[in-house]
Image (cartoon, rainbow, N blue to C red; front, top):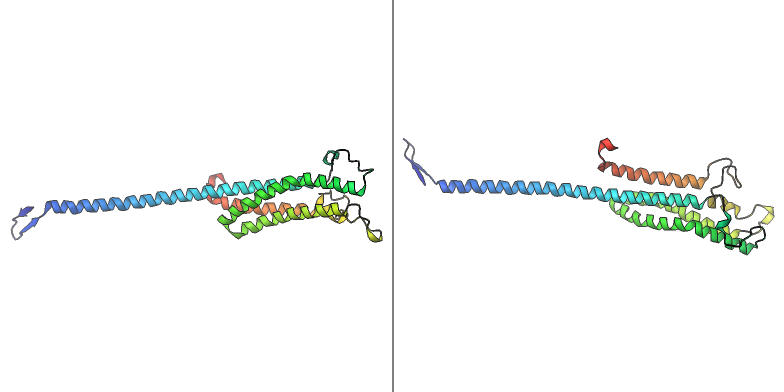
Length: 226
């Protein structure tokens, strides 16, 4: 303790006690700063992890979307190769049953990659929906709906193949031909020169998914790289 005897002033300063208070204030301030810095570091780390998750899910969703589109388009090739039919199949002399089995064989081979990519797309869609909500699920469902439409049409085409049509109209399978095959605009069962409706539908669904994911990813891409 330090005593002072200045004129008109009489007091005593507890120097060790004053230093203790100052030390406590410094320690408290250090703790507050450490907590603030830690909170900022944690917040930044969490933002980075969320960004990585968004970018990873978006990347895998786009890959699955493009794989589904490419497999879908390949499955609808209007050119049918002889090698796609079972060995020994001769279309000129085949019975109706043999023709149906041969086309079923061909469609199964063509549709298998589409089925696999669609399963992958459904799996990743669940992750995307958990991150971004219902909208991405709806956009993805539009593309998966086209896949289901193609699978159904392939089955109906095979079932109706070779079935006589009443009243002299075209063969019944022709109504599914434009779904099963991406025929040229001037091809059989054409549509007045218009683009194939199902191809346009798939392309539009893919563009909507891609635009949605790209927009989400913009938040994590520096402006100079956009």
